[in-house]
Length: 296
Image 1 (cartoon, one colour):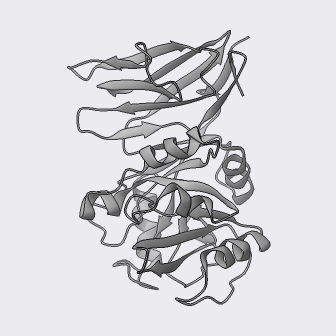
Image 2 (cartoon, rainbow, N blue to C red):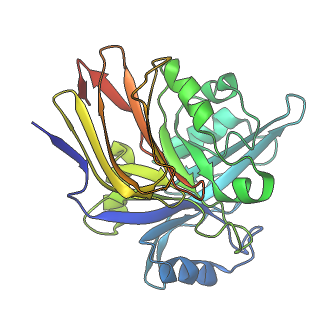
């Protein structure tokens, strides 16, 4: 029996990392929410630096509670930016608060702890693994890509997945400047309507994918096969922990590829599907686990 992963349920567009004038963003809270609403977003999370936002409805847009915490390890040249999503109350931190204490504080208050832009932060696998309780990574970061050319962290995520640590994969703007970083990356999430409860359920279940532009129209699996339909792209890749797989990459120089399929192998322990359009913009699914030729 074929299982529909994307295509039947309504998909909501959202951004889980953005800044306002409450910290170092260029837009006020109201202007920020209006900008995303006008772009067709269904929800965002306001995550100003060490400034908690309790969430709510702002100008008709669902806004999740959020905050970004920072610990800069200058000796190891590693920046720990941990984004707290959908937690219930603020707690005190400063520049000396250790990353583990931040993650613990978010989880204690019912939230989701996300490791922000690992590539920009020059993070190693060990840096990420040492913080317990992190459940997702920002693999596309708009501001990191547009202003530092270090926004794609999928390679880091795959290295972690190959070692058994399979995090959720998020696309975010990390919008500060309201220019090239606005709507640069986002997630599409399965939910019937934009409520805090619906969005949280889908985030916890990882029923979303990350994108910088291209969209998944339909994704189904069953009988050891995976089929995907997308908006036009140049490349669709079925990424797994096999070293070489000749059927992994589907390619069209014209950028008119809209469908691809893949047959799972017994030694594909996980699968991640990635697409890229002619502009170099990508999408990626989360990791799906292979259980005897079936995705779970």
